[in-house]
Length: 298
Image (cartoon, helix red, strand yellow):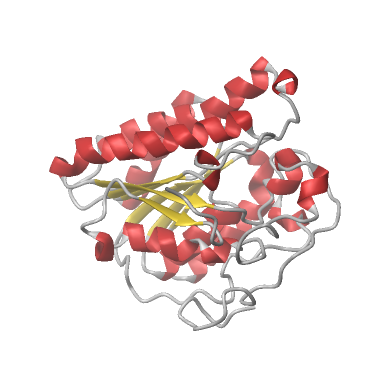
């Protein structure tokens, strides 16, 4: 366990190298039932006013990377809306409470990212609740491992692309129409965009698309003063992994093949999103920031 994100520690031993027990959860998975529990920075993230007065929408904000980002944004001074599947309500309630404990407004937006109308409504409802929107984090995603392309059904392929790519398009299009100059869009891609696992063909395809979408949109929106960037996580311990995101034989050794020798924790991703959302990154757009435990990206 770490003191806070500013503490100077050996990154190899900052967190234990976990060896998760065999476990399965039905999709989408709950952080509440994750063994061991992930660290979202609940007890460690220390804000410094870097996002004071900002208004953020984060998809997949109930657990994992989205939850850590929501906590960090709130402690940096932003009001935060989170979207999540209705089945994830137990996790979402905890994150909403932590946002409010930070003294910020919180907005819970349950629904399914495969629904275009719901995606567009996320922006409308956030603007109505907060008086505007100037940070968008497209983070919600679907990942289901399959040993062979022959095992990937048309339904799974369609749901993965719709959740990971179409939803990003729908939400971003609605958000751009509302965002003032100085706004930022941050999309979650993955090490899978560069080093695709043979068991994650459909998921890795979406992450490469997200990377390309982010770089193209960054050029288009730059004259409007809206920056677009992406974060590429490596193996991060979240409910996505035991809810069929990894084969069981890989789950128990998750993240141990990184140069740092361990899986990352969601709390280690939050500072990357804060940096890209804050004015400190004012000259950064079209960038993909890798947080991969040392796994190289181009």
